[in-house]
Amino acid sequence: MKDSFLENWQVQIKKGYLDLCILQLLYRHEKLYGLKFLELLERENIKVKDGTLYPLLSRLEDEEMIESSWDLKNVKGHPRKFYTLTKNGKKQRNQMEKIFQEMLGISIKLKG
Image 1 (cartoon, one colour):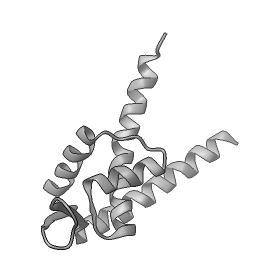
Image 2 (cartoon, one colour):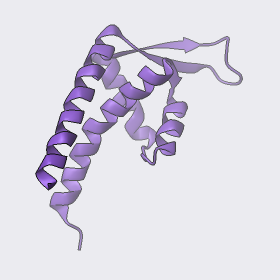
Image 3 (cartoon, rainbow, N blue to C red):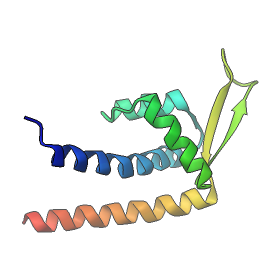
């Protein structure tokens, strides 16, 4: 029997964590396109479907944390939409990372 409380809790954590992961990847790589996000997340054992990723990218763009542009010249094959961090996105990423680390520290303290 599945525990619905645990499933809901896990979904909520993953939603907030994915925001941070996207911002972290852009901070590290500066410029990424959708399928590359999926590949990099998969390498870290974070399973994300494109039906989850693209709305998240759109929301982060609406919130002016990231911006996008099409690269029609420098890619092989189909044009790609690349995403980069905005100044606001960098600021938010720094704050989110700090809060996340504080939360992990509290969790570790509560264990011991």
